[in-house]
Amino acid sequence: MKDKNTLLSHLKIAGIVTPKSKVLDLGCGDGDLMFLLEQNKQANTQGVEISEDAIYKCVEKGLCVMHSDIDGALDFYKDNTFDFVILSQSLQQVTRTDEVLKQCLRIGKKVIVAFPNFAHITVRSKLFFGGRAPVTESLPYGWNDTPNIRCLSIKDFEVFCKERKYKIMEKYFIANNKYCHILPNLFAQQAIFVITK
Image 1 (tube, helix red, strand yellow):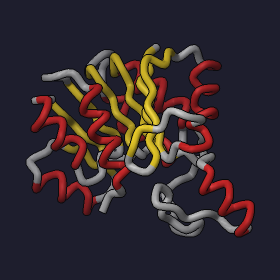
Image 2 (cartoon, one colour; image 1 turned 90 degrees about the vertical axis):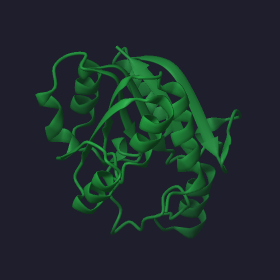
Image 3 (cartoon, helix red, strand yellow; image 1 turned 135 degrees about the vertical axis):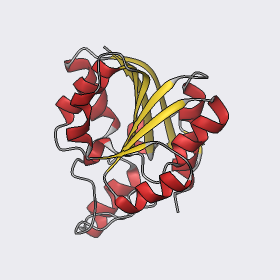
Image 4 (spheres, helix red, strand yellow; image 1 turned 135 degrees about the horizontal axis):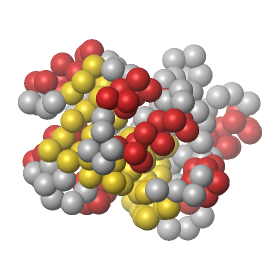
């Protein structure tokens, strides 16, 4: 079951996507976000997912999904194929971050990136005081079974975009199932960015 912050993140992403858009959801999981976009925004969605169990759930919902990892799926798409490319809770699991984001910006007019903030105060305090890899509501995995291979913060992503001259069009932060407006790198559990070239 998804945590409440992820559900709010999905609603915010649905608010960003314009009606009848062409959308590619990378690491679409069980298709909840794509289903929401199709139902509420009449979006034409496609997904990319590596988990066979998740793909079956997408198919049960009548969604179009390709079985592939994100790193290998993007070369097949032509420039500007999509209005939006979405990486929701999947950027931190990508091996070739630079290349994936370059490809996303090539095939999509806008890229929506949502990720857990590894610099959240709970993560910091659990590591500092407990001395162990933190497990939180937004990061529910132990060090040995986590799908996350990148530990990025909001500041990390902002610096990354600035160095590559990617434009941050919009940004939103979530904590405890509400929008966070104060010191998001410290207090936000999740971040959502909309970027363009």
